Image (tube, rainbow, N blue to C red; front, side, top):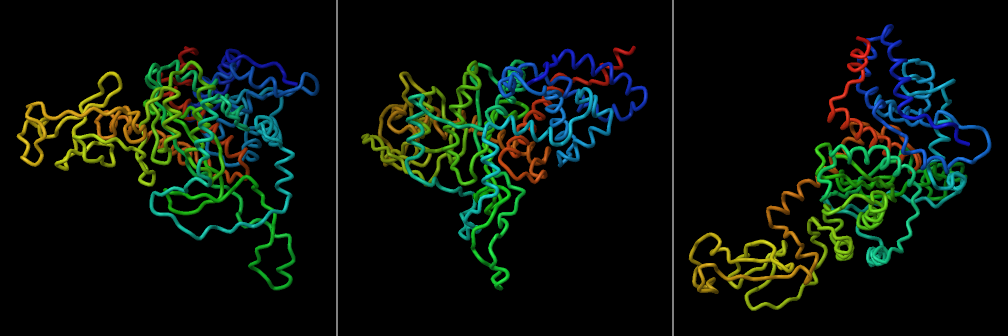
Length: 497
């Protein structure tokens, strides 16, 4: 059963009293930890109680210090300690860290940390342990290489279309073992960041989608259980056990190499000045980003029912017709770069158009791209003659109108939603908005470099997701401290005066 949940206000009061005592004996260390203490002081876990309580039975031994364990894990990443076991022992032997985390009584053992993370993970732990012991077929590292910047294609054609059809009918079934961790991020930090106004435009919310490789700390060779070595066979392909049964082979398009692990899929508030992630999901390394995007769109709409998502920003991996169909159903505007491998379905004979270029711009019979001139009601894209826009007299072979305004062509986006987006790709508005896609890459930089979540050598999807979730919490807390300019030690000294 879950012991009494301490209110955040009570934690703040106790923290102030205990830090006043520590300030007398080790003020210099308190000043060095000022930002870390400020982050935990602002982290309000009250909204997590309705999410955590159903995970515990009504009877049995009371579980205590659950909030303090969350703060301790957040502080662990902040202090760049790469072992939960070492960190648990460090907190137990350090009265200052013990009090900062808000522990009461005795400090929990490392096993308590792991038990808590297992409880937050909705998948069956016993099944995971069976998979670790089960002998599986050995899969060697793929030998083929993709081109620079190229990503793995979907395993099966038509999968995204089937998922989109289910999502439109609200029948998408999504088993999400990280659901509790997603709610931790949503209810404890993202909602507060939204209220503070640091996620961007509250009425027209822009979100960027992307996936990133998350390398496993396990050896992809596994542990051999055969007797081939005794027979002098050292390079056998016999089945073996793997310490990380969740890890698979995937292609890292940035490093241009194969990796063994999972893909961390991330949704970031692209207009945020602090590049704040609002959603994470751990998927198989070989899963295509367009499949993950369908589930992510469905999840964020349920996690944040009060947010109005307007702009969808992504790279060419999500450039396919089902995604545009789903975005139209949700009323979102796509800002997606064209994938050269995807063929357009457009076939629209027009007397003034010869063809279209890769950006969806109509080409006149003189071979000159027409200039986008805005969106006309009802939902028509207006294009004008390039020479007329520049105020020049067109040559005879390009002259198709006697009007000084030049020839005008109207195109409806419904003809081809991929090629003719509501905001044309060659327009300045599209370029400005698409540049904010780099926010999701910067958020990955914060996770993998600033908080070094790969340094933990995690050997399960559960640990990788938990580390990413607590890194996201830290990123939001960093933004809060910077945004409001809060200093715990400064406020403590003012109180003492």
